[in-house]
Length: 408
Ligand SMILES: Cc1ncc(COP(=O)(O)O)c(C=O)c1O
Image 1 (cartoon, rainbow, N blue to C red):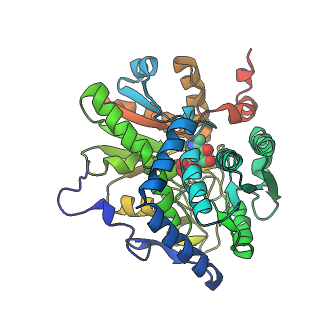
Image 2: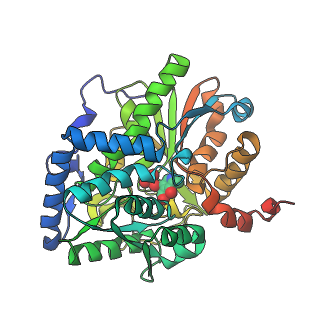
């Protein structure tokens, strides 16, 4: 059922001044991080109202990132599904994914705060590449932390970051994936906070990050809403996007929250529902509310509160917590969430390539797989799907899992 806001709620009321989205979000951090977060909040609140900052952000999105990205009608796939499928083409952004929208915004903010060094975490490598790119453009030193497991599965992006002049530091701790990279980036930030900004890549972490990253990604939905109205004279019936930390999905959803439009976020269902086999923070085994890396939200944990390992074929969805605003939107019944298994995402990767000539990132392929599975319920409807990134980084993984794709 579509829930609209007309009755009572203003979605813009969150987060509150303490950075809370209802019971979620906040600032669950050690004392040493309170001052850096307060400095960042002040700087961001100042910048978001400054027309000079806004026009510089808009200029770089237009002239450097290549915005607006188009929406494409997926004609052949629509023909097989029975719904009208439109793709918001974030894969066409410079560096190949939506991550650069936020990287541009935060890098400009870092310069405004007088910080000439940026640290970042990365999982799939797209956020790391985006950060390294923007740092090269603006002449900022860049250090990217990446789990060594992710470095192995996303090797082309490691190479890219290094070629762009960034230092990539492998993280051997824990499961050697995104969560461990975030820990190391935070540690670096606390140690070097006078010179350094932590450029977090999703709507995660302590306030103001979930709000700030959302605001820098809202451009996706604003453009898509306008483009859809221009092309069809109507709004879409359904929005679909994959959810790792949740930035591309929030970026798309936000501009439509007050519209009678249904929304689905797609999490990584991995291999099975068993704890450790997936990264579904809402629907999979081990999901419960807790605190991780500064924020209260849904996360995967065992009975004693230890964070569970996660699994997904896509590094960018392989994270145990979900952005706090998603937890809020889910409780409010405004956004519904689904899961897609690895095998379904791989199949969708292949299908979109063969029918539309687009190789999606494996993250985005989760959203494609969801609509491929659920299309019967949306017969004749307009579906707008956020194609968050392109799949070049995933070719090795796809070949390994689908040997028949080796070009036989
Ligand atoms: C192409 C792509 N899509 C989606 C994601 C998931 O992140 P988010 O949920 O923040 O959009 C990633 C993360 O690395 C990504 O690279």
